[in-house]
Length: 323
Image (cartoon, rainbow, N blue to C red; front, side, top):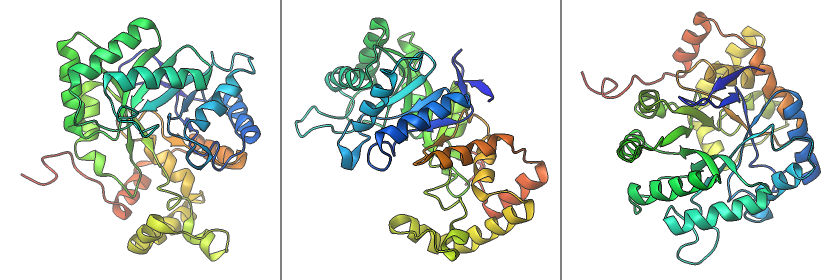
C-alpha cells in the first residue's frame, strides 16, 4: 500500500479510502466487520463515514457498526484514520442539523458515542451552510480541537469560493482551517477541475473524490447489462442514456488495454493533481479486492490522452470559459 499526506498536513493516509455508506442498509454488520478487517490487512488505514449514514437501517447505524468493530480491540481504532461528517438533519427539531455551533457540539458528541471512540481524526462538513457565519463555525471547531475531540477539519461538496472564504476566515483566526475537500469527481463528472481543484491546490487541501465509478457507470455497466448481471435505474439510467456512446468507447478502450473499466477509473483519479485518495464503497469483500487492483495499474501518457479524448476535462477557470 502506498501512503501520502492529507493535503498540507503531516497526516499520512492510504491512497484508497474505505467508504462505509453501504454498511447497514446494504451490508450486514458481520460482513462490514470482515471488509474493514481485510482493508487493514491490505494496508488501508483511511475510513470515511457520516453521521447520517444508515438511511433505511436508521440514521447513525453505520457509525454504530464501525464503533462495534473498534470495540473488538486489536488496535483497530489506533490503526484507523477516521473521518466522519456533520450537517445532515438527524432529527425533526430546528437545531438537529446544519452547522450552527449548537449542532456541531451535539453532533460530535453523538458521533463519538456511536463510534465508541474519544476522538475523530477528520471531522468534515458534509455541505456548505450558507446561513451560518464562518466565525461561528470556526469557533466551534476550535473548541473541539482544543478539547481533543477532533484533530483535523474537512469539507465536502464545497465550491471553490467556499473553500477560499473558509480558509481566509481561518487564517484571520490563526487556525489551520480545512485540511481536505471531499468532492464528486470521476471521468464522467469533472466539473471540480474548473475551480475546486485549483482552490484545493492553492490552499493545500487534499481532495477525496467520492463516487469514483459514478454509481457504477464506469465499472463496465454495458457489459454487465449485456450479461444480465446489472440493471440501472433512476439517475444512473438517465446518465447512461445520455452518455452511452462515451461509456461504450470507454469500455472498448479498457478491453484493448486488457484491464477492467473500474480499475482504470480509479487509477486515473490517482494521477490527478491534489487527489489524496478516492473513496471506494464496497458492499462485498469481492468489491474491495477489485478496488485494490487499481493500485497496481500505471497509466502512461498515451492512455491518459485517450481518456481525455473520450471524457473531455476542464481547464481551470476562468480560462475554461474566457480568454
